[in-house]
Amino acid sequence: MRTMRMFLLLLALGLLGACGGGNNDAADQLFADMSENMRELAGILTGVTDEASARAAVPRIEAVREKMRDCARRARELPRPDAETEARQNAEMQALMEEVVPQIAAAQARIAQDPAILAILAPAMAGMENDL
Image (cartoon, rainbow, N blue to C red):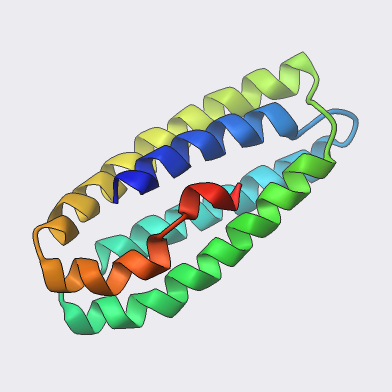
């Protein structure tokens, strides 16, 4: 689950460095989509309380990962943002990280204490940092 924190950091850096430029609407939509994905992932992990909920979470995690990979692809296609857009998105990303990272960290700590739940979720989470 340590991989998740690395993924979130890489995601923030990757999106902020890649989106924006001449098409602020596309950059803003991309940022909104990724924000929604991160909140969704935090909610999924927070909702895992036992083996049954972990099994139910696996396809949902995989679906969010697919949406995140799509966002990463779209981010690579956008030009670098102008300074104003980049500053605004940096502030928005910081606020998002302050919102979701504690939720994810708390869920990770709880999940890590239950080897059965961890075993169910680990394959769905493996390599998430490579989704960027």
